[in-house]
Length: 433
Image (tube, rainbow, N blue to C red; front, side, top):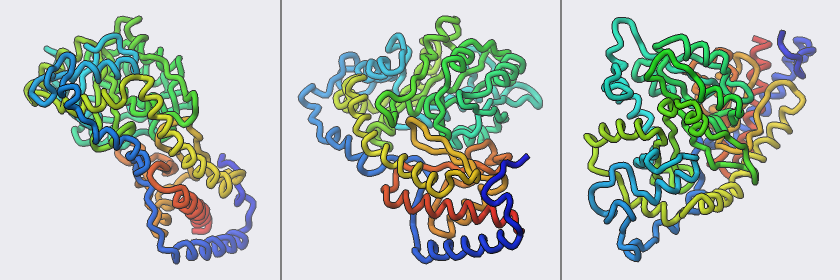
């Protein structure tokens, strides 16, 4: 039964009167010729400026050298320099630098390549490539929703079947995950954003992490794709606590199930950071043997710059506190705007995450597409409706992802006010159609 909202008891005449009022306000916003963009979670200029000192470093003082890779200007060092791997080890709970392999600036690139490698060569030495599973045998991935559109795009591009899994307030519905993973050998993976999920900002509970770490997959090449993109991206002093999944997997002797992805994209430079794969030594050894065909070595100079600039876990925490000073007021501005315009109306619900890069807004069913289209008319750009679901199909046409990080606070305030007018107008139009 639909929840009652401010318009539930309106007569048709009252609805038409309200629609006319909102249409007039909509026209006022349209006359402003706005150009406001909240489509993607990208760092703003002020955040990027925090890392500018890294560009001025004189690495000649340390002879451009790493402890294990020698001259970082030269070839070699396929798995990355030890100083940067030590930094990520201390942040992720990895037991050894041998469980970490460094790459370029994009963790999405590693995820994509892992999928392609699994399709063409198999997940481990001797396993059946997913492209050769047999007639009418397609690999499947579980997709907690709402989720990250880029994860879903990779699967769709390579013909991997996606199965929606409900994302609860403490993480994915583990009853459903266990039933599917443990019962179907074609289920080869699950996408996870375990801390401050994209877009809901949910952090997995200890119970969820423990159950993920104790899955008994029907497929021996099943992997948890653990996109830990926001692992140090807190908006509060403490932030959410996330249980160490690698430690839990090791307790169960199941560490081979994990592929964890992290990066500095939203720590230093989005287009010039470094990223890492955290996995068992067995997995790293296999993946290294295949990456060896692709490259003689990564950009070790950039790894060295990052290691010298960020130093260690304490250095990263201090650097992220500066990010928090920039971002926290932006998230607060969005929450204030939503509360001012929609609080108590039952026309929308939204999360107030303690970190990450997004706010997930749920509007009445069958209103997200219309709302986003109306916002576009006003010059307020949002992520296309449905993007947070596989195949871009939101079954309720209800979820809207808000990305507060890039715009100024003034622009955010204006954009949220305009968005709320569009939500009300879209809903009333559905009632009066």
